[in-house]
Length: 146
Image (cartoon, rainbow, N blue to C red):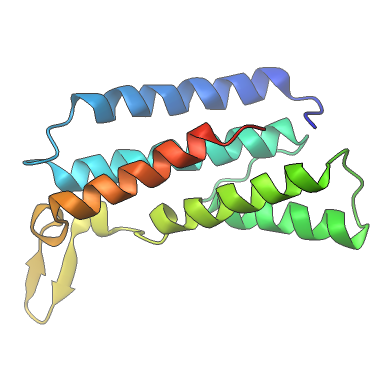
């Protein structure tokens, strides 16, 4: 499945691993927003590694899952020709779907949520259970075998 861009792919994976190491140091009972933010960054970097592995230059975006979707769509339409099996496509679709869960958090892990004249901080906004679910999504993405 993987084409070229091996060095670029490895660089993105290294960055993703650095994010995960930060997550492992975070106490999610007190720093829930930070945990979600770094999980979001971890997933973005994994997706960019996949884009590079497919032979493309990962764009500057906080929603690389949509780029993966575009690559899959172009492949299915015959616009681009990649050596992808049906299983590869299924796995890429799984990754993209899970990645959107974290990408959809957008700026909430950094800035919280505004309600009228107040801002609910990320630590107030996220429950520990929600953080655990989002972290599990990140783990699930990393465990999909490509």
